Length: 61
Image (tube, rainbow, N blue to C red; front, side, top):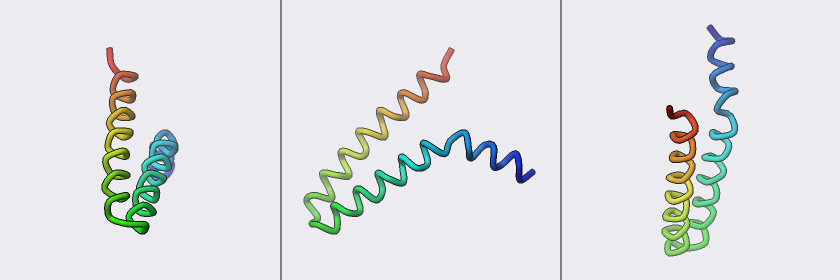
């Protein structure tokens, strides 16, 4: 059971790290000021949207 879970996590580890990096990127900009944080959040949503479209297109028919 644990081996199966680890294999599933290992398949998505790059996406997990990528999302974690974006979270810390946005958090760092919010530490600078609120306006920079809002722009960083918008940028992060754009990047994550493109990433989700790429993943969805890769696994399609």
